[in-house]
Image 1: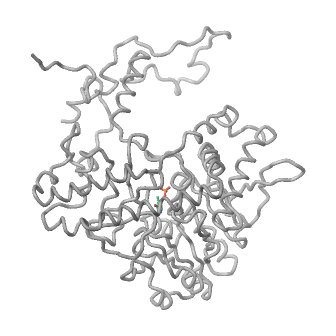
Image 2: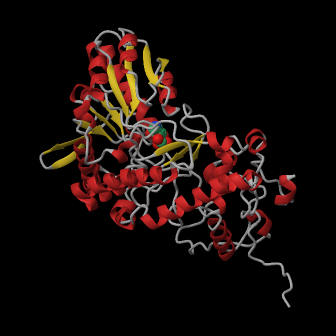
Image 3: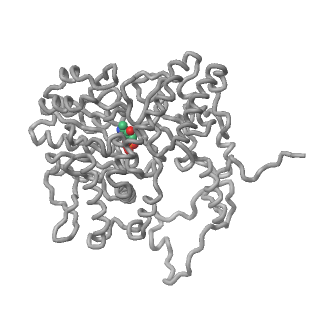
Amino acid sequence: MITKVRSHITQNEPPLFERSSPGKKGYQLPVLDVPPVDAVAALGAANVRPEIDGFPEVSEVEVIRHFTRLSTWNYAIDLGMYPLGSCTMKYNPRVNELVARLDGLAWAHPYQPETLAQGAMEIMARLEAALAEITGMDAVTLQPAAGAHGELTGILLIRALLEKRGNPRRKILVPDSAHGTNPATAATAGYAVENIPSNERGMVDVAGLERIVDKDVAALMVTNPNTLGVFEENIKSIAEILHKKGALLYMDGANMNALVGIAKPGDFGVDVMHLNLHKTFSTPHGGGGPGGGPVAVKKIFEPFLPLPRLKHARNKWSFDYKRPRSIGRVRAFYGNFGVMVRALAYILAHGGNGLRNATVDAVLNANYLRKKLEPHYDLPYKAPNMHEVVFSDERQAKRGVRTGDIAKRLIDYGFHPYTVSFPLIVHGALMIEPTETESKLELDLFVEAMTSIAGEIDTDPELVRTAPHSTRTSRVDEVTAARRPILRWKPGETASKAAD
Ligand SMILES: *Cc1c(COP(=O)(O)O)cnc(C)c1O
């Protein structure tokens, strides 16, 4: 006879506070080898709290089990395919981790004197050189901490150059397929944003562009390949049109996973671009960082790059602060140094041919999914796709099932959802990026899941509309969670009470 028992390892792990009981400790301090001082006397009464209200008191094993259990709730790239389009969720080889954890690198301190940081500085210099070669640009700064930060740095560089030429200009052009960070960046850098519509193939309309580029336009910010996964075939003419009118071409390089080892933006007219180390160069990401958003530029921008710049003289690395035309610092320290180590390890472990193969496989995998799923899902832009593919839910919407529902049903099949409802120019978008690190076996499982869901929508749309069915909770009230989040636990309150 099987009787239902209450498992103590529950999928609804309560907050740590609920395990707390007074006096428990998860640490032991070593015996003092200096005379004790009074905290109030040493720090001042204003800086000392008699107690921290509601602070959980738990043992070491309770802390470990709590967080280990929570970690099993996560979907992770180490668990299965993560087809989030635009995000390039590739598997991160363990050799990168091994190198980043080497003592001398992992324990480097921001105030370590230059004489004791020569190795770390050389790693940064080598990474700058590798990224310059990969992008075909002349110089690279590693300061920006993420893609959006790189964009801001890049547009400030463009502003600095134009200011020196006498007029920073007023406008930045952004295609309607752009990532939301592009217009946000332009506005933050003090520019007016002008949206330009894509043509029916999902690319920048060259004739239209020629009409609107004038002496007010500082730059065009273009993602290439763009967020439809389509390469801008006319990128050279686009660059020429801009340059003829004294404007510049900024490339959002978040999609470099489709170009590395095959084409160099520096060769097709790009003036300034950023890279996302946490996408293309294999740093674990998601959950808010750390990341890296290096900016690569043509020679004319070099004097404006953020300071300090790495300098090599008399066999020694140093930081050069004497750069009068620099836009200044965009960041205080290199707290994301580990990301740079991982990126360089990834580049060196692959070598030139390996990087090129990764790109070829990324494009092959995306096209494989396109061909397999095209019979089942509507593909609004049919231009040859590169490393990602964007379907729409047009067919499924007729049965009342939208892209968000399909994504939630995918969870029941053991996959992380794809990117939902982006890019905005595709109504009801399903944006899928498998990356090169997935095998045919895994891709086929994904195809099987997506095909099966398409079948379910024909026979039982309600099943998909109410998915997921296999998770602890199914549909949560996302609007209330965003508008009225419960962020503070009150002593004596249980999780279930707080949720009420
Ligand atoms: C991810 C992404 C960004 C932003 O990069 P972050 O590192 O998240 O700031 C910008 N543009 C595109 C096309 C992206 O995919």
